[in-house]
Image (cartoon, rainbow, N blue to C red; front, side, top):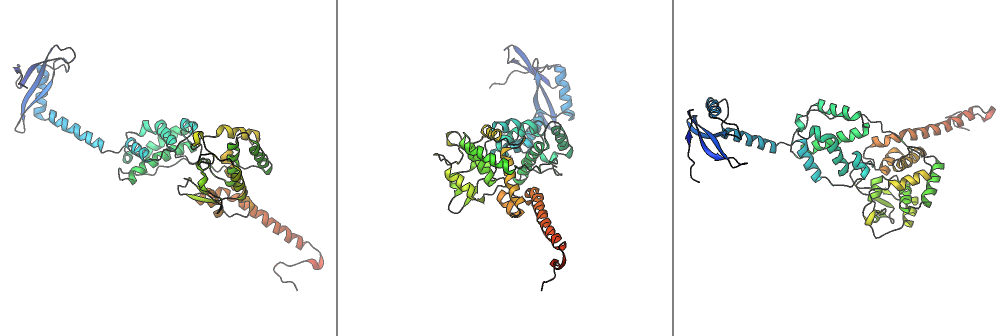
Length: 405
């Protein structure tokens, strides 16, 4: 391309060429400055007449600033911008970590309710849809541009206080737990450094143990057996007979049921590791009679795919069985199953933990008071027998611990 004609100005080192405006095609002057810095001759654009409102005087002032080093040259400015861009590309913000985290996370399905509220209806709350909703609604605006190492406790405190004004502690805990998982993911992958403090979770009183009386259980079983929605009836009964979680029942497939050896394989339990639980007689009888389809799933959804929701049918059963207000059909049945075993006095807490596939004994500890109550009742029986022996008259008195003739 031939060199364009240069026109001098009244200011030393300032010249212009004639160009055209990009928007109108009309003539426009383009000013340049020429100077030496560190022994090198530099010529660079100062700006356009109309687009940048550049004048010879402004160009001369810009030249002086660059000669004295008070303003970087165009080349220095481009280099600095490139370094900033490169630094950003190598900076793992919460947003970048989230993108990587969700790309590697199995995308389990969640119900419309879970997606809308940002929570999952099942204890296994780590579904992709629920996590996405929590991030988009509660974390993105404040944390997306932040690096984990730059976080301070006040950032977390402000979020916690803000959310607790309108949300339950358990929901807030899920949001903070997601933030912690995203950060830990980055740390584990060697992408970033974590904050210099521990993200504290809000205290949650979730030791809510829902139980049903024998009469309520009897009526529930009758309603389930007569339910128009056979899938829902069997779903509820299996939850009662085994204590399985909602998500575990949704994922249950016929190959998971070992009728010969008497076990059920639990797919993707909350603890993460595949588990097996005994197939008791009631569950065996129920599953033997349960209708099968071409689907692998015991309780299939549309098209034989994995079911993701059964709320409407469960609500009908709950109403027909006249269950107590606030009783959660599936959570409550799991608690009922655990409570019956704990209060029987025949099942220790370690065994109960294994039956419930609890990862930690602490989760099973909520039922300890039921077992303690049973032990107290047993102790009272012994006390009554001793009291009866002591209050007998004459030779019928037996001294405890003393052998009889």
